[in-house]
Amino acid sequence: QVRLVESGGGLMQAGGSLRLSCAVSGTIFSINLMGWYRQAPGKQRELVARIISDGSTNYADSVKGRFTISRQNAKNTVYLQMNSLRPEDTAVYYCHTYCNAGRGWENYWGQGTQVTVSS
Image (cartoon, rainbow, N blue to C red; front, side, top):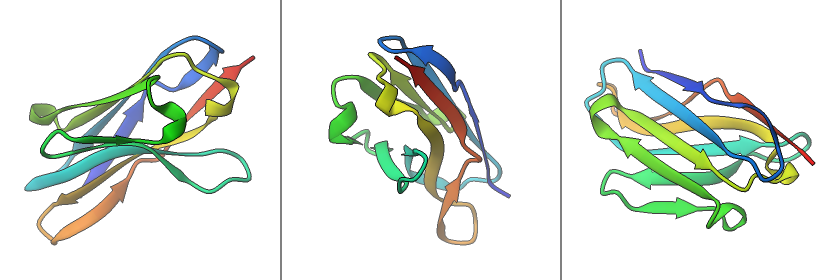
């Protein structure tokens, strides 16, 4: 069984920084990509950032230059360093992975962690 455990969310003032972590556990044969999505109240879930197995990254335009995604392959862990936070970054952040855990390639999601940025 694949589990994604997120940590690092919380309350921060605008301009501050937070670091999210997500550890993927279980019998994992291979991970193609890991990433972060977010969902604000009344809005659709959106991609924030993702990192592919070859190390390439993608970012939402709204976070480019402020957020950095990184990955520690040996620990199946992905991080999201969030700097210069804005009130509009307030959302529930979900960790995501596309991996092969023995049943073929599937998408897996974390339970979400709340990030609140005050003005």
